Length: 268
Image 1: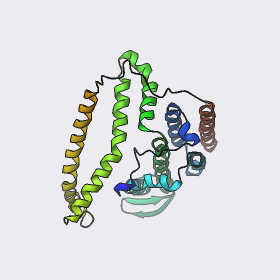
Image 2: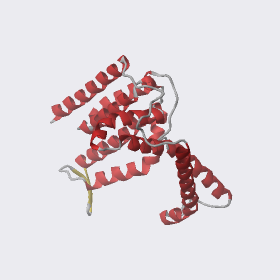
Image 3: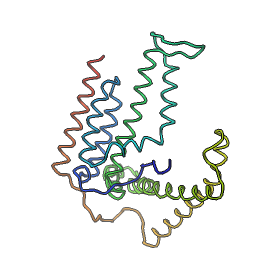
Image 4: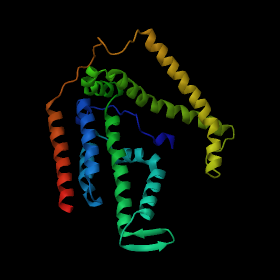
């Protein structure tokens, strides 16, 4: 299960999506999220699906890799579906048992919110899979730079977000090693009820937290040894520049968002 977590992982490549400016990819991810929340019916998820299919083809990322990012959230998806199915109000009742009832509207709501979660995770995974942590840091910092005039620490925030994303795969790998070592010593993480499984995770979490704090200390010492004092006066090895491909990507994304909004207006 730990190997299925793709958040923070970067897949090097030289595709059209990889070559886009990181600022463009961050802004288009925001447009994509807005598109998802503008979908008013499960039927119209065909527009985000087509958009996601286009991004997948242009970035060289398969749908299997995107679904791999959704796999760790399967329990959250089940909970979301069940809660909306049984506790959403509706007039067309199909099945009723005590306080639980299944309605046509409840089923549509359950499908709608579950699909929204799936598309959100799959779409945002494209950003981290096609953008290196350094480029992502530069993009976030430049986008937040206007706020520095009012004292907002844009560079520090971008650095913290990038470090957090960068160390997610490292911590996952560390947790996987610790889990295998514990299982070799007889630990059981699979059997038993929920409380027993939670108790069995203690031997995993304690060394993982110790390792995380150790890595954080080593990183702080390394940054201090290199005289790191924030972003003031620092230059970049790779200067960010918008290209014609960024314009085309923006036009396609805005067109998909407008089409989604219009489809939602037609239903109403």
